[in-house]
Length: 328
Image 1 (cartoon, helix red, strand yellow):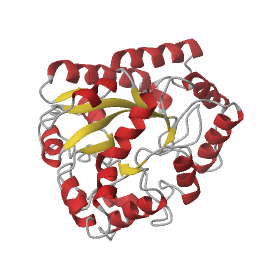
Image 2: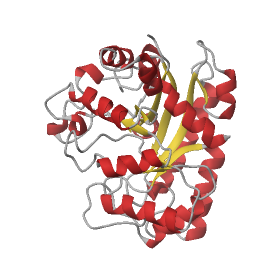
Image 3: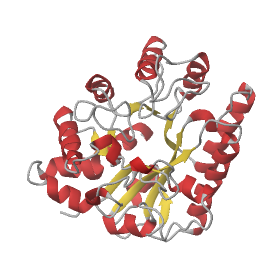
């Protein structure tokens, strides 16, 4: 049952941008190194352009976009562009299809950026990387666009509305994985009120009904994503699964399948962990999901509870179907 794998989130680009001597082919450096992906059968990988909220966010986003472009040009045996042509040309020996996303719209503009600067940065990133898999307005904290996961009482700001208006019709999904509940609510209301053509997804989120954490989706928001034809990638981070019980990963995946077998997929969220200052977060991943080579064993473990059709959808079909429909 070796299915190809599609994954909606990793942080290889920020690793390559900020870590000295970073090597995407070194398995001991990061859990989403290319050899791990190849071992796990990954055929599609979203690579996030991640920034914090500070004066250097635009420059860091620009650097990561350039790294993405460089990977496509210099590593053609390993990666290719995930776009409309990918579906027509793939084979078992095809390279990994990669596509960029923006995790934190602070990469488009700092608190002091003008709107012409924000639009120019948005357009230049898209020109450099090609189609974007999705955009997250925030990360954990607040920015000029809205409130992140760990903010209370901060929803969609006027600048967030303006950025959503600019996204409309560009076939770029909005990602709810790093929103406060108030921001998620504001995004959905603004899309509906103004009839904006913006798909809605959660790229790397788990379920609050399984593990009560602010970073996880309520079932209400999960159902909204499903009803709008979106997809939900389950996150492999221990803190968002259950800090003590490794098998909770399977519960999150099965819960998602029960909500909609056509929406659930993987969004592992592998990133560089060696310099993370909070010791309570280590280890970041349970051994059963500690690198991108683990997808086959995860699916094998689930084969006792899910059908082959459900596993195939989870592994790659839901993601492929979503983007085929989006781009067609």
